[in-house]
Image (cartoon, rainbow, N blue to C red; front, side):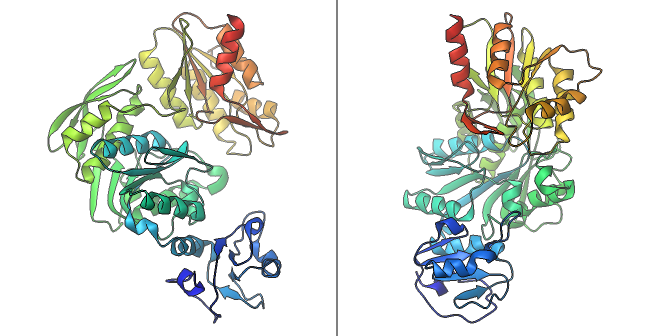
Length: 478
């Protein structure tokens, strides 16, 4: 592809010579003969420092933010911001051929995107999905490294979706992706908001930065769908220019779509969706948050023109998502549930939902991630202790931190609360402890890991799939 084609629509601050480009990248390790290397300054590494080396290694040109005195340099105002546009041009702007549905918020994004995909497929649409658990093109599954991929991988996925005839792409849009410009240049048919609670402050530093990052999604959408029960639900779309606002609520009558007469069951939730008409919805995923997730998905589908009948039918056929209130087979008189809850609000939601259906104790096994927002730790300890009948405090992904010090931070929040607990630092041993001490009708919640099949320790990353761990422990007890 010609360099001028790749730079189409981008403000260039210097003159340059036309050349052929074979690939584009911001990763110096991936530069090969004919690559366009985009120099991005990160927290630990500045691509500008190796710009000359990349040209020596065969790069066709380098994109920079300042004059480095190099031949074949392309100067722009913000190289990070233009990288997504460069990638889009390189792949032929495939997103323009898709109807994009973007979900942002602290909790609920993954399940809601899966529900939207299933609703659209139920009426015969071809749909792609991009998210935390996996990426999908129709029924084909592709591994996901990040909630929202880097611009190159993102545009590549869009291109593959177009080639497979997809009409829609539903995707989770993380606050980091918005802040880092990974979705620059994308326009969403629908942008949806689930909720906003404390998370990722290790990256964003302030609540305002976190909020404003989420808000960016709604600057680039035709229809905004938002949860008016959340105190930020209307604020996040305030004074923005889009064609239509669609609201949903469980607690208020003052929304376009309202959930009424909610019934919680061990195998799901039932409620009436009240909008321009009324329909009885049966979502086979238990928990109060399933009402919000399915109502958000339904509201997005209604906004796209789907009928009440088609939407309600599709939700009734929906399947659970790996690592989201996932029941692990045990053939025992107690239940084990795996859930990704790793924030204070996420932990509160899942424990509260389990308490509504539990016949016995709710035993919460959890930890907190290392190298992440430390202020969450005592908050999560307090929530688990106040809401659970028993807690097992253990390790999550400690990363470079000492797991025992993370646990000490968690225990600070549990002081003065009478709920019994046990500390077992090794997560496998903690799960074994919970299983060996389980009582009839207990629900054992393994919180924090969810869909992950690894654990990041100070010594490195190891394979760790809680489904396998549970099966191994149960087999040893037989």
